[in-house]
Length: 215
Image (cartoon, rainbow, N blue to C red; front, side):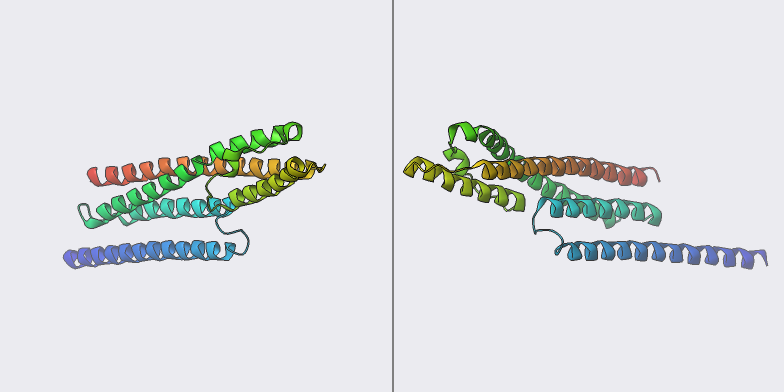
């Protein structure tokens, strides 16, 4: 009688655990689907590859990663199976991709720093740095906007130098300052987000490794 009761209790516990695990997995997939749908709908709200769009993508990636580590801890997956190797491989790829993005964003620092300095002094000198105007393009909306504003200003200054025409460039200089200022703030914000994400990836990897070694 007791043996039957014990078996029934064990079976019930197993069923409850399976239901809980299934619920957790389904909850994660629902969260992932909603997040991807939100990103898809944001295409119409932001310029593609703009700084706000990249910030939205990074925020979603951080949320997905956090929820994934929580899910794995809840599931208590068997130690020594391939799930841990797969997580380590994928998190390494994510780390590397984020480093590539950080390097690209960081490379813009010389561009917006030189641009800000140039815009601040251009009223007095009416000179546009050739090195700055020949910078290679980066497919971030704010970068392309700054380049466009710079090219417009360059055309105005060439008219002044080439034809001696007096042109009021104040508005274009102010627009250029605004473009470079926005680019600088946005780039710094993305770098901070990436640095926080790097810490979260390291913490997630350590937490799951510790979970496996402590069993």
